[in-house]
Image 1: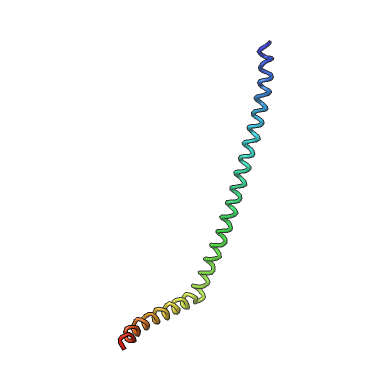
Image 2: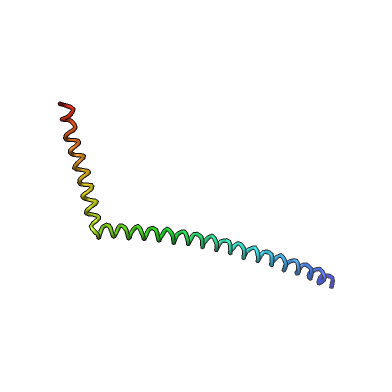
Length: 93
């Protein structure tokens, strides 16, 4: 009977320790869920920003903006060629 008298308090201590450990594990999981939710929100925000950029690029290409950009680059190239061609002549004169 004395063994039973020792086991009852030990069982109570064990159950209490198990309750504390379970509570701690639950808090760890909740903290992990919070971090995961924050990361998901950041990814969603970045995803929306990237989608908006793609829409803008699609609009530029389909609305003829791409042709405009090519024309601007062609003018820049033409000016660079003219500067290169005119540059040595001015120095030689």
